[in-house]
Every structure is written in structure tokens, then in C-alpha cells.
View (cartoon, rainbow, N blue to C red):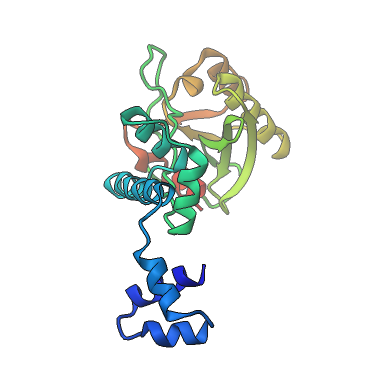
Length: 237
């Protein structure tokens, strides 16, 4: 172990002297040189070669793959590679996988359901509560799968009027969100409610609920996220 430390130190800093380090660590200089000339063991050679392969795979893929993916890739090319061995090599060299943000589509605009006009037209100011609401669906990645969150934001004060959460992205998600918002805000009438043109918001059941409680429906233009900018900003905050 001490001989290995001396060798690593000298290779890193050429100004260090073997004799000086041997004296500090209380080992013989002749013993160090005898150890250094000893043929590399098969175990160390395999370890060195594996470290080189892991390094190449890691950096050639922009430091994204983790130990499991690297081990699987190397195993598919040559002999089987142990994931724990790859993980240990990556820890020793401080090679940390970059986190790639997961993406999940929440809006399905490819449907034949009626789409409302963009009445809000990016007029995001409101001088009183319960006049203009905006709504949207976002997603959360968990260890057990995707979790979907529907929200409604009052443009007056940018306060959350209602929300609902579920494991499936269905019309029930936005309907439950709207029902909660109405209940929390005292069943207001004549609210302009803006959303994307996803199938959940265009569903007959959701639209019937809007008409039943005198809501005015507004929807973003196709593929234009700026038409619902307050919700985009809220999810990102």
C-alpha cells in the first residue's frame, strides 16, 4: 500500500524524490524498487484495462451513462462486466453521470373534438379575483412511475385556485381540478378559463361542466406555448 502511494505521488509530481518519500513512510528504497519492477498481476492488469474501457465509454457518451448502462454496453461487446466493479471505478475517479431531465407529453392536440377560440389572447392582467383563470397539466417523475398534476391559476395575484393529482392523464384529472377550484373560490360565475387544446380540456364532459357553471372557455393556438405563459412560468418556478 505504501509503495503504491509513493509511485502515484511521484507520477503526479515529478519534483518528489523516491528516497525522500521512502524515508518519510519508513520503508526501504530497495524494497520499493523491487516492488516496482515486479510484473503486473493479472488482476491489476484486468482492472487497469476495465478502467480504460469504462473511461472511454463514459466520456464518448458525453458523461451521461451510469454504471448499469456502461456495464451492459461493455458486456455486449466482450466478456460480461460486473456493474458493481464499474460503479466502484466511477466512484474512485469521481466520474458522475449527468442527470438528463425526463420528458413526458401532457398535451394531445391530435383529436377531432371542438376547440375554443383564444379569447384571452395573452391579456394576462386581471384587476379582480375570479375573472381570469389559466390551467394546465404537468408531470412528476417518481420511483414508481409518472405522476400528473393539473392546476388552475388565478391571474389576479397569481394564486392557485385549484389542483388535482393522479397516475393517469385523463379528463377526470382536469374535471376534478375545476371542481376543486370552484369549491375553494365560492362557485364563481362568468370566469374566463384558458387552457391548452388538449383532449382532456376539449372533452364533452369537461366542456359541459364549463357551460353548466357559466365559464367562458379560451384555448391557446396550436403549438404556441406563449398563449399560456403564466402557467409555463408557474410550473418552472
